[in-house]
Length: 159
Image 1 (cartoon, rainbow, N blue to C red):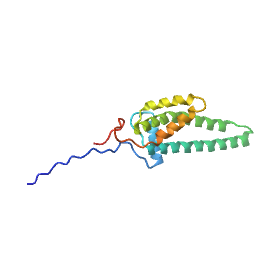
Image 2 (cartoon, rainbow, N blue to C red; image 1 turned 60 degrees about the vertical axis):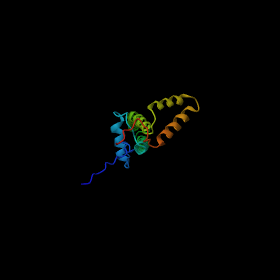
Image 3 (cartoon, rainbow, N blue to C red; image 1 turned 45 degrees about the horizontal axis):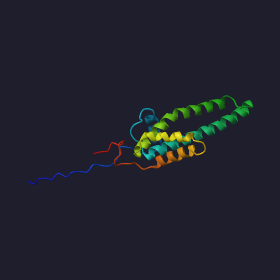
Image 4 (tube, one colour; image 1 turned 120 degrees about the vertical axis):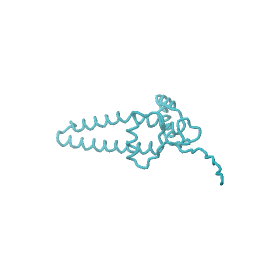
């Protein structure tokens, strides 16, 4: 009778961060996880695909606003109810998407191995002339950082 040697497997360094290939799945996750899940991570694909979906929704609102102004001008000779309703709907969308966007960027920071304390970089945006550039560039760099799979306290790795 042969005795099998036990082979010790090395722990897997794969993260639990989901990589989305569908913009719709990433956008659903943006709204589903946005208000309730601040801990954990978000992959680059989840972040950028949901960002793209938000841009497309904003473009849709811009087209609707132009059409509403055109209809109001043709019917009432001045901006009226259609324009106001469209602008209010856009404002409500922006306010509703603000919290999930902050949550997603916080999870993206975690995925890159950074603490959410990097939000303090936002304080630089109040510095005249260069502050907003510092904030925008730092957010872009953080969003482009690859997933940190080694020594990352925010990931739960499969063992």
